[in-house]
Amino acid sequence: MDKIDKGYIDWLRYRTVLYDPLTGIPTVEARMDEIRRVLRNNGRILVLYFSFLEKLEKFIGRENFD
Image (cartoon, rainbow, N blue to C red; front, side):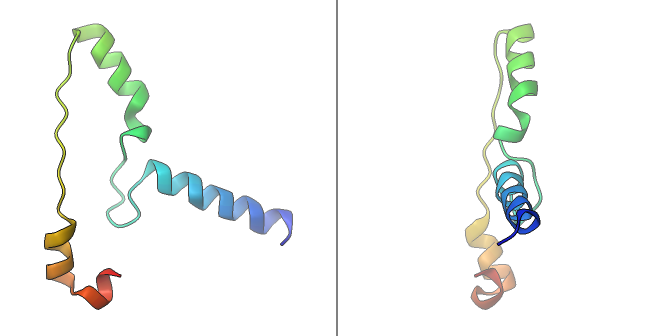
């Protein structure tokens, strides 16, 4: 594997940590600086967590989901 291939693979791994590969929505890790800033300025923060993978699997079908 040459440097270009390895660099691209590393970039894909890094991007997967920052953005959900299925939805493209930023992950918590991608927003940590902003979360810290809001917490520092306001003293508190509200975090909403949505899990819709089961419904998405039913909507697009198991074959397409996997």
